[in-house]
Length: 291
Image (tube, rainbow, N blue to C red; front, side, top):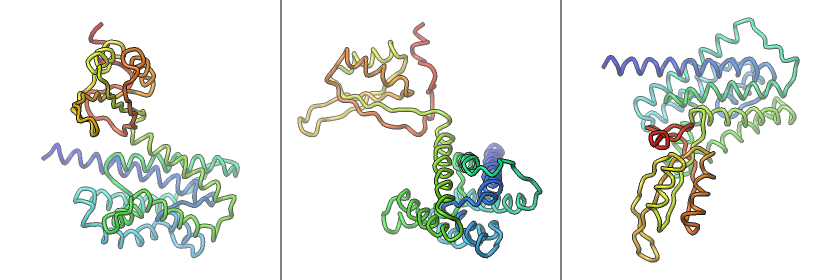
C-alpha cells in the first residue's frame, strides 16, 4: 500500500509539473502575444480578450460540467488525475499572471509561436504520460464516441476547429497562422514525449521461409522475433507469421535480408507507439549475446 501511495504521489507531482510548464507557455507566449488555442484553453483566451475574464476561472467554470458528464466513463484513477490536472493548471495560470516576469523575444511572433508550441507540447506530454489530462474537450469527445460512435480524434479536430474559428473574433488571420504553427509544434512534442523520445516500428512478415528469415534477423540484425500462427483466408493454408520490433534504422536491414532469403515475402510495417519490456532502440541484444 505504501509503495502504491508513493507511485500515486509521484504521478500527481509529475502532472503538477506538466501543467506548470504548460501554464508558463500559455501565459508567457499565448496570452502575451495574442496567440489562440483550441479546446477549453482557447475558449478561456476568447473570454479574456473580449470580456477580461481571468483564464484560470474560465478553465474551472467550463470544465466542471464536463467532469460531471464524464465521471461515469473516465475510471476512478483517471477521474482523480483529471481533477488534479484541471485544478493545478488553473492554479498555475492564476499564479503566473500575478508574477512580474517577461520573456524578451523582441515581438517576434514566429519565435513566440515556436516557444508556445514547445511549452504546451512538453507540459501536456508529461501530463498524458503520467495518466492525467487537463480535461476540456477530451472528455466531451470521449462522450460523443460512446454515444454516437464517432472517433475521438475526429471530434477533437471539430471542437478545436470551432474554437479557432471563434478566435478570429479577437485576432487576425496572421495571428491565426502563427497559432497553427504553435499547435503543430505542440502535437509533435506531445508525440515525442509519449513515445519516450524514440520511434519504434513493428514488422509483420509472412513468408514460407520463416525459419531462415528468423535466423537471419537474429544473427545479422540482433533482434529476436515472435511467431504468430495464421491461416490464409483464400488458400486455407497454415502460415507462420513473424513479428519483429525494430528501430527505424533497422527496417532497411530487414528488407535486405528478405531480398536475399525470400524476395516473395509479404511485409507490413506499422508504427509502434510504446514498447514495454526487454527492448532497446539502440542495440541488438541477441547480436551482442552471440559475440
